[in-house]
Image 1 (cartoon, helix red, strand yellow):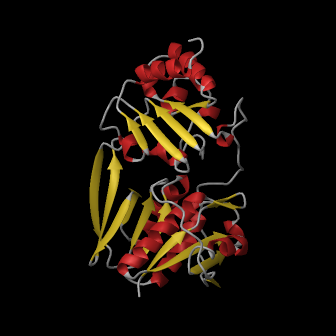
Image 2 (cartoon, helix red, strand yellow):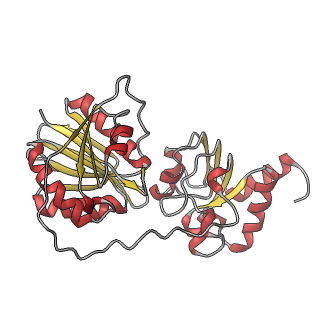
Image 3 (tube, one colour):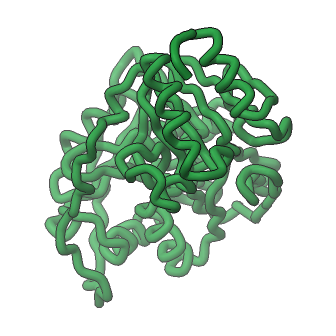
Length: 325
């Protein structure tokens, strides 16, 4: 029986939320195509990670070695190569499309000769053909890709597409995977983690975010948005283009290269909806989008959408709220 394996991503002793997203996809593929969903943890000490994952997936496999204390793609690939050989034909290996997965999976593909599809939003099996959908050009085009998965396939999954699954009624099993790796001649070295300095606000703790994007047009319009946010008792946040222009600080950026937020209400104004941004706001309670482009990708994920010029809506909101403008 073929299986679908999720490679767990962890950092500084904590599992990434993206791993649970991949588990959701693995379980979906298991239900549709009869694949057995499993997780793989590589670490110097994997037990704590494995026990956490066993709440969500029926089987967890561990690979332990001192060299796996911190992530280096050469070491991970060296241990996964013999593991993949053990998985058998038709098995699919999933990994988050993060810096972790983007370094690891192409290397593993080169070493195993298995096809690799990156940045996937949907997967389906048609016999031995693995078909995937990939969103490109900031979500304006959906690309379809298929590979021969008869010998297996490697996939990186876009973050923010799948929601973490519910816990199992009975915890899964944990088993060590007896593989060893040949010595690796490495070109990279782990030096340490460097955290971004704390900013003037912590948008991750806000219950209401008013977020602005490229549609704000000019720096002189930032105070206008900040005033509205204050009147609405919201915290002002933004997408990457606003930070790149240095109109707002990095601490206010929502997205994969900024902060992941889970506000009760997220009001996005003038944001097109690039996947990097959407991934950072996947946990919002109510998602409201305002954009004058009716085909903006953000409307695909928003709970409510307004096709209108953001400045007209800002005027209307200020008038409704009252007070000085």
